[in-house]
Image 1 (cartoon, helix red, strand yellow):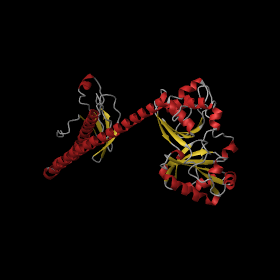
Image 2 (cartoon, helix red, strand yellow; image 1 turned 60 degrees about the vertical axis):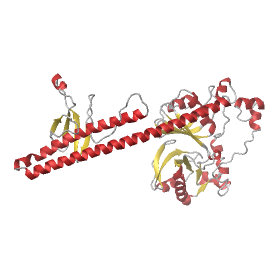
Image 3 (cartoon, helix red, strand yellow; image 1 turned 30 degrees about the vertical axis):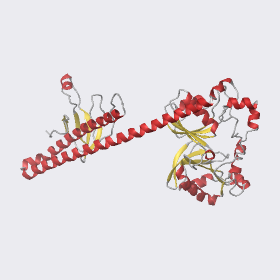
Image 4 (cartoon, helix red, strand yellow; image 1 turned 60 degrees about the horizontal axis):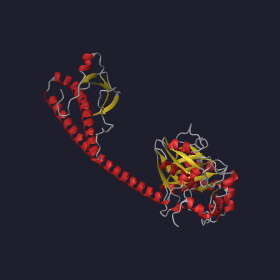
Length: 454
């Protein structure tokens, strides 16, 4: 029978021991690397005598967990404390069953405030995925299968470890400088071969060293740089035979039997295969719909934003051209007294222009939000917050803003309201525009873009 549930398999076999003892899984072979690069004895001695380079890019799966409840789900499922956990740190994450029995362990990498990556064997990743999909957690999980279970030859990340007595010398040469001290299971961004690399202080072989990871496409360049840096320090590449034995020296059991075979409460984690197929199909439909809607939203927003930018730029260019013509005529026809007043007039015109530009852009991007929201079928429009060259003054408390308008640095602040008469006269909103190069201040009431400067 295909697609049997775990419960059905156990009932057929009689007990878990018989099921696992007679499973046709075959020997555990580390994918992606040869059994030996030189011979397994030299490779095994190297992590105690010189140093080694492990290529861990193939045999472990990854699960990216992100969302507001990322830390909550990890804290709920694992025995670990996350009281002081933060991005840039890692943990050996150990989830357990409701009765406290171990599911397994993986390394948990804190990437961002609401984003972690779990790296290791599938049972833990499946356990977290199950609870993310069935529990009340606001998270999204993305699974990156190990190489042996896929046929595209790709992964999300490469992953290398440099371990042994000479490891830090190799790392120093690869970096091109002495590495700063990095506490155990802390991470830091470094650069090797001109590429960004995340470094984790690790000690898999009981020796100092770093684990290095980054985008899959950068892997060959980083590997080549590490191999070159390790030549003078006796670094050995480790194949699959020696790799599996190093954990014995540190007492770590790499493949515990997941505690999913006994206990009434564990039966809920083994749903009917037909239900699983339906749930998987529904999740696929939802994911496809979300990706389609996201692309449509991004395209619509990009199109409308570009249109608003072009329109605003054209109006601004026309207005500046008008100002230039006006002041050139004054220079040609004005007397000495007119020319003495010209710098102040230019100053006032540019101040007024900054406020008009602010309101025009705010209006246009509000319309962008309304148009895009309408295309999405929203019942109410939502404004789009956009960083612009000048800022709109709203009725709520207004923070000072430094802006750069037509070659002049100015500062916009809320005009003080001293009494009820001033408050009544403060519509439309007034602003104080301070020329940052001097002490001049003027209060200007914003006007529509198409009205001339007063």
